[in-house]
Image 1 (cartoon, rainbow, N blue to C red):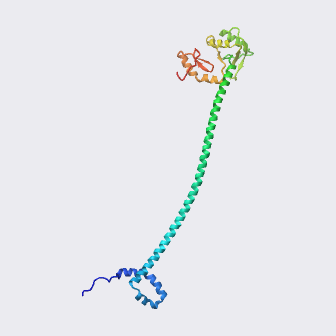
Image 2: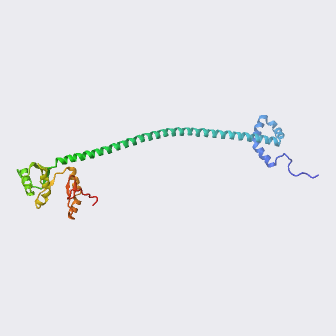
Length: 272
């Protein structure tokens, strides 16, 4: 009968058996210490391959269990920490959300307040413009019969009433009725102050304003209207344009707060 080649069924290979014995050696050493050195040979003789495998499997199971416990503990710790962080984040998010909602509410209130204030300012500006216009019209009415003689040199012991009558005679008003005439405005070196005149009759003023430029041509002085500050600013605003129009043959007169054509119609500079 021929011999069967290979190892018997159920036995371990030499290298595998050596590896198992090497890994099992610490457990075997502990067992030997427990039973005594005199039984060492007996223990080696009594351990079969299957018993060594069982010991190794138990050791592996114990190690695996320890690793699983360690991993589970670590994961549990990480989960607890993450849960704690999540709760803290949610709490902070809630606080910030409440603050943001509060700020949004306050911002909405401020926007409504600003809108209300803006409307009030607009209303006040409209009222101010209306009152300013009414005041200007009232002041213009009070100056209705006034005119100014500009450039007439100041003389010692002068009589402004007599000076005014002489000037108006040159214009063509022989017996002008005057309520008052006096120097007006701040004194400026090298320049005589205006003579402010108030006539008794509005028609005399219109006549003087109409013919003064023609009759006083070549004189050192001239006659102009007594304008309110608002009207004076409006007159000066378009001075250059009026001068250019005059050179091109278009004559304008400043009356009732605006430049007008000879027929009294208001002139539009924006359309020119």
